[in-house]
Length: 327
Ligand SMILES: Cc1cc2nc3c(=O)[nH]c(=O)nc-3n(C[C@H](O)[C@H](O)[C@H](O)COP(=O)(O)OP(=O)(O)OC[C@H]3O[C@@H](n4cnc5c(N)ncnc54)[C@H](O)[C@@H]3O)c2cc1C
Image (cartoon, rainbow, N blue to C red; front, side, top):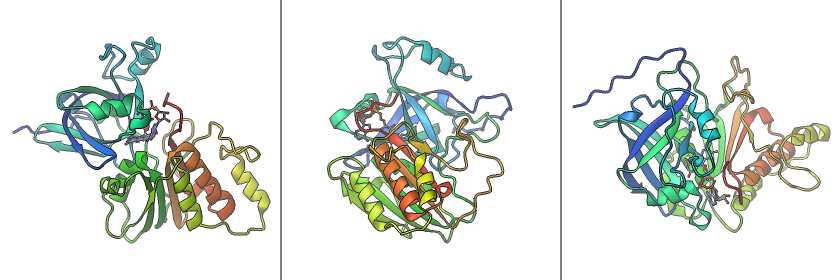
């Protein structure tokens, strides 16, 4: 039997590095989701800090392979960026759904949402993946010390009332968050999905209220409507404060066109993405929004501007944007 001995951590290691993985299992979880399990000795030093920790997957390039890139330091990115379009493996963002040590060593699950209508390299690869296929993953490095970051679930101290909303791309992250909720908390999840059976991928604990929002028309439109209806606008005297809060939400008030602001995670440093030391936010409630960028931005705007939720208690993340490939 193989015994997995975690490697010793050092201070000079990159927080994230490139790993060589191999598909060791695939499972169709529901109409939309396929779970792909990765393994192989290349993952021995792949860490996981839980919650909605994100990773980057590098899919095979136009020739169906990978150019050589340094795996064990941070310089892979420089090399990746300098490759020609044909040589460069397309990179997409996903969530670690699980990481465990099995009899074959470290195993990592990623739940892929298949979106056949406009499949990019990520969804197309997942639809065809089978045991034995290689994949390169940029993931958390077990040898690195300190906060490895890349986590968006950072509730203020004392928060016990949670609202979590997202679409299929956020289901893996939501599932990991729900598995780690503090005892005694009250949580409502809004999930916009194409099929009710896709809720199977969420594995929500019984005490969590899950509201299935069927997708109708434009992705995210039904989600925005459902969350905004559940938390109606309240009339407030301080309209100036409302406008100030909305100013930086990424939607131009006049045109309703979304600018590039698609992400805000209170509790992190916007430049490094790392957690702020001595985060002194304290609040009773916390909202976590992830999914189609226009939809989550609209929801956040409604909650902050029209309902009066403190923006320091709302994390919103555009996981993808309609009509645009991730770049
Ligand atoms: C932090 C983070 C975590 C994520 N975690 C996951 C995860 O665990 N599982 C997962 O499946 N996705 C996840 N996503 C979303 C995923 O990165 C995007 O859906 C990505 O665009 C998929 O890449 P692609 O190559 O399939 O499509 P792209 O080449 O990026 O896009 C091609 C086309 O597909 C459209 N598109 C992208 N996603 C969808 C969709 N869901 N439905 C319909 N059209 C779509 C785009 O708008 C574009 O028009 C995550 C994103 C982020 C930022």
